[in-house]
Length: 463
Image (cartoon, rainbow, N blue to C red; front, side, top):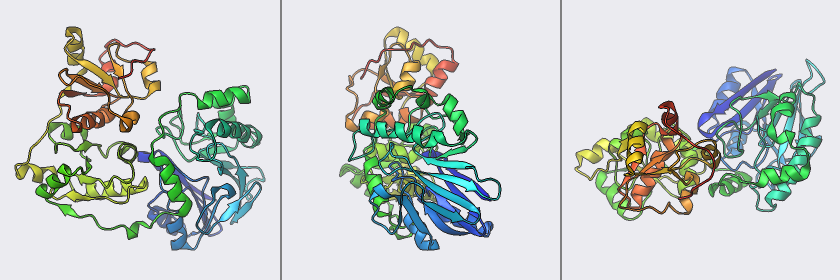
């Protein structure tokens, strides 16, 4: 048996290939499918089957293109209402991949159509070897229950409880667990960093599986859910119909500094993908700094939406192409072009440049003692509750699309997150709105803690 996990760090997304007897199946494929074709060719396998655990909301799956390029059959839950050719799945449906049996388990809860796939390697045992759990069961967590247009979170959470206890937890403890996401994904709340687990380990360590009653499970799963990006429901609809092939996307147009300035004045969205320190040292006024180094596409989709037609500022053509691909993975297919020559061309043309000041934790501590600066924490609620700067206000970056924090324009405000990635995005959004007294805290709360500066835990003070 051949088995490989493909982990896409920028989306915390895991997809899989299973192979035997010259045949292969791919589960939950990412947008760019060449990697599956390459590995299949290397292993002398032909991709015959494509399994989707559900209609993904946080990324666009390229099941339709992969099927077109391989002739493979797509399998998805019967409740998905998929508009592309597919086999609708119900409990007990089995697919043979060489000597491997793959059995479908209907596990509604994260979404109504969610399905898990039990993998049985008949050459070794008649018992399940692994289960591909999609977003139903994560490592240390379970899927969020608020991504449906047809069910309430409470209804989905109740279904999820039943799916976990009546389906997945009936599998042998030794069964390996391979989910569709890892730590950092917004499809759950407290996933661990491991890429796999077992049913037995999750039974003992997963907080959600320790909850004693169905009622309490529903209460806990629907309380304090992280903000749901608006593009999630749109991506699910793209996946319901099947995405456009990447080869059909239009080439990007190069723009001169003068053209970019005109488009900015007309309200265009400009994303600067350079590292945060470079953005802070100088950038196009009105641009948003979202570095390629982190969860770039998720933040671009969450902040701007998938119909934003952003224009890119990058250091190289390679960065432009990487940004374009990563945006397409979350459904941002229409990119308005890129600044030819990058920021260096903007400077050479004598265009205005904006600098975002940065401050060290030690200097911030001194200014807080003087009362000469405010602090805004843009981490998520769980991070805040675990520890924060006593004088800080709190406003998670996830909520910025629904309105920026109310600020005193005459008073400097230092913005921080965990490491400085999200805070730079926040600073650039506030600058775009006209605030000129924003300062990025270099290194974020990690640096504050490393410096041994004081922190507290507890009550929220929202900005």
